[in-house]
Structure formats: C-alpha cells, structure tokens
Image (cartoon, rainbow, N blue to C red; front, side, top):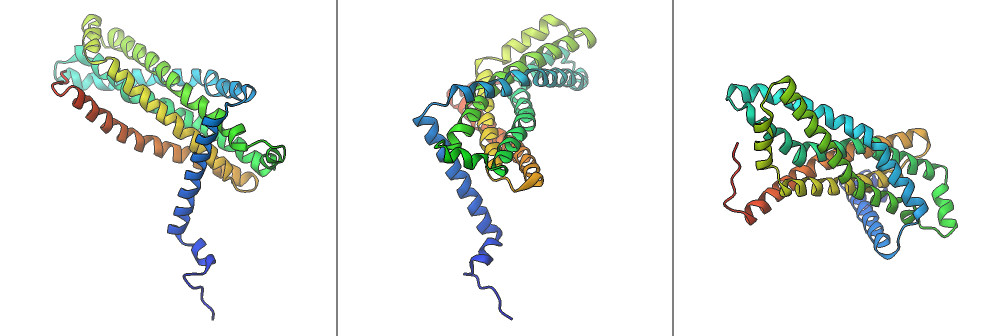
Length: 275
C-alpha cells in the first residue's frame, strides 16, 4: 500500500502547523493590502457613509442599554464589599474608573463584534458565494478598497465614540443607583470619583476602543473573504468572525492594560492610587 510522504503536498494540507502558517500568511497579506489602499486612495463617499450609519447610528441604542445595566449591576455588586470596609462613599471611584478604562471599551467592542462583525462577515461571505466579488474585479474595482476600507474606517472611528456613550450612560446609571437606592452621599461619591478619573483614564479607554475597532473590522472582513460555499459556509464565517474577534479583544485588552500601566508609572513614577 502506498503511503503519503512528508513532501507530498496533500500531506502538507492536512498538517495543522502548515495550515496555521497559511492562515497567518493570508491574514498578514490581507492587512498589508488594506493598509496600502487606506494610504494610497480615499474610499468612495457612497460606500463610507452607509457604513458609518450602520456601525454608529444603529448601534447607539444597544450600546446605551448595555452600558446602563453594567453601571447599575456594578454599583449593586460593589456596594456590599465596600460597606463591610466602611467605604461606601468611595463607590464612585470603582464604578467610574472601571467603566472608563475597562468595561466601557470592552463591552462596546464585544457588542459590536456580535452585531457588526458577524454582519460584515455574512455580507461579504454572501457576496463571495454569489460571485459579486468576482464581478467587482471584472469591473476594475478592487474588493479590498471597495468593501474593506470603508468598514475599517467606520469601526476605528466610531467604536471609540460608542465607548464614550457606554461610559457616560453607565456612569450616570451607577451614580443613580448608588445615590438613590443604596443611599450613598452624592457629594463624596463624585468628589472621590473626580480624584481618580482624569484625562489619562479617558485616553486609555479610547486607545483600547480604537484598537478593538481595528481588530473587529480586519477579522470580520477577512473571515467574509474566506467564507465557504453555501449558507453553511457563510454562517460558519459569521460565527468565526465573532469568536475570533472576542478572543482578540480580551487578549489585546490584557496587553494594552499592562502597557498603559507601565507607561503611566514611567511618566509619573511617584503616582499612587488611593481609595
């Protein structure tokens, strides 16, 4: 019986390491092509504005509702721990700082990965299956420039804005629950919050949201271009887009948190966080 040798191309296609390198190479090529078109030619307004509407305007309600409930839950869950230490008046410090630097950007990006990322992958995947992408090439239009660049710009530009909206709504909801339901003194609530939430925390949150937006756009569009045939292939691409975007968001969040903390203490070595 003949056996496939290690040099046989068929055996390489079944090798997980080989497939991993192929996937990484394809992603790198996709990113380089995106950056090239992003720098060399502006996107068409007729493709940019609809993506701004889809990513930004239509996402405001879901992001606002998410931020509101996260702020309320964070207030209720944190209050019991602070009450045992007689630190109820410091509740706003944890809520506002957590919303601005962590929960706002991560939750806004996660919602966008599910709502926008899956839709991008499904839309582009459907265009590939129905040969619309091939039709664009026949008409002399580059699919990366026509389909990916507007979505990338929309995500990078508007997900930080959506993060600000989530922060604002979450902070107000947390303050409302803390001062009216949990009976925390509003003066000390805001006084301690203002002491530990400044421009650096806002910059940190916006920096994270910008990176998350880029990841969502790149991964979702790439999965759409790699979609398999039929409805099953398109559905699998949409699922992979969300899962991979979510994992990328969490991993990048950890790296950025460590990086921003190191930068902060490098710039202000004598800074201390006090509750």
